[in-house]
Length: 348
Image (cartoon, rainbow, N blue to C red; front, side):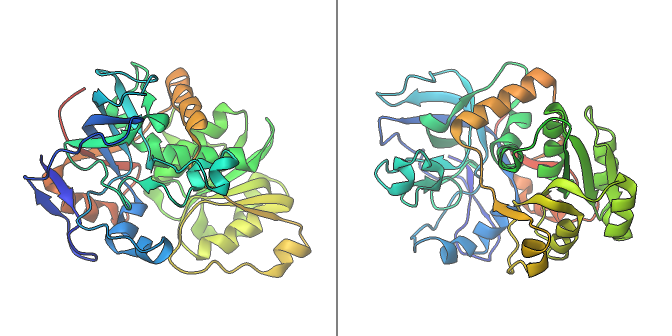
């Protein structure tokens, strides 16, 4: 089959035409004919070998990238009951948690250190076929296209989890720092949850994008004007919770200052460098700092249904596999906004 591969870390992807079609090896697995695969910040980390430092040593290369998969089921394992051949589906990175570790026993299988992770240490979606874990595979509502669904499997599932982690009530205020792939979805989720939304970005293109969404933020703030400007604009002493959907280190102090006393600060971005946090935010202002990972399987299904029911917009631009280097160049442009995806096949 045709697909992209990482053959050597810190080198360009290789487009191969003779990759063996993967086979179902476990009774909980499904074989998906891939339609659209997402591209995000994590792909850069994988390509640069960052996860070799974070996770136990793996002999992962060559590796097919992308952990945001959509497509059509073409085969299922003997114990699969929630999906069937012919279903239009989407699936995130999680595969084959062990079921016996302390996290799995607590119902936190997404933290299982023995699991496979598609596009990170197991082959992902940037090829014509991928094997998924049926427990994490979601049947798509008919009104959601593959191109819309792919970003939901990481960007959507991650920011949705962040909002749940913030644990806000309708009418409270949330700031989302970063109006990119995660942020533009988080704004819309938050509005549908009845929250007052402050969106912050240092780039004009994402700010312009969110102003044109079906569900717009209450405030779209230019970060270059400083945090005092933002506080004055929103007319208060700070927000109830801040979600950091960026890996820009200077943005973290900005976000902490924007968070009100006794508020919640949720870290979602993955900076390469350590995040500096002054003790005054923790002790004198009593801010609670939490990390947030991708949503669990049930929450992903709820999030997908919310997108379908509310008509939430997922702004994308698609590229064929052959144009992966163009996609990467566009990803790094100042004018980049929304989500970039790879169109693997023309199925829809």
